[in-house]
Image 1 (cartoon, rainbow, N blue to C red):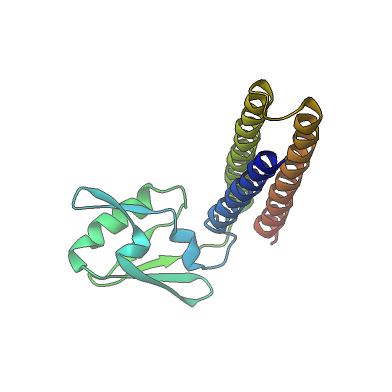
Image 2 (image 1 turned 60 degrees about the vertical axis):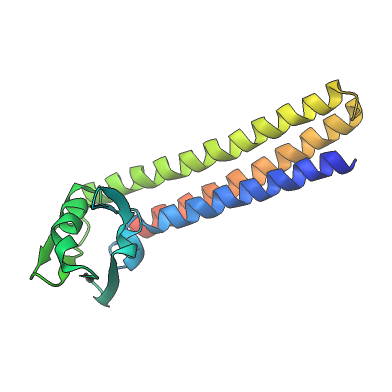
Length: 187
């Protein structure tokens, strides 16, 4: 059935996008090395608008344990510093009026455990997103069946296929979490 295949393709695409979003989100959880991606979640109150930090500055990692932030507008340096202090990164910025330096400290065991919890939370959000896609498509399949546009066998086959897509996406998320956990706990 063309309609059912269309629904399954849509589900596959939406689940893939959910997994990709979680990959990006997990990249912002630090694992002891300086990585400009750590600051991707930081939003700065710039003239009353929440603006991503990467849109306001150049971020670089000149050393293994140092990030530098060069704001395009020097007047935004205090707002950037405030946003970093209020984030869950546990980093303390220092600035010389033109450049913000973030020294990435060695992670202690307690901080590693906290970061693992953050990673678990992010992946759980991904699982919920994947399950929501499944729920939406299941609802659409039932509507097709009730409208007489699809038979019971077609609906049952599509539900099985949808469950396989869901299991695959959740498996990918679990593998991502396992890898991130190992990266965080690696001393």
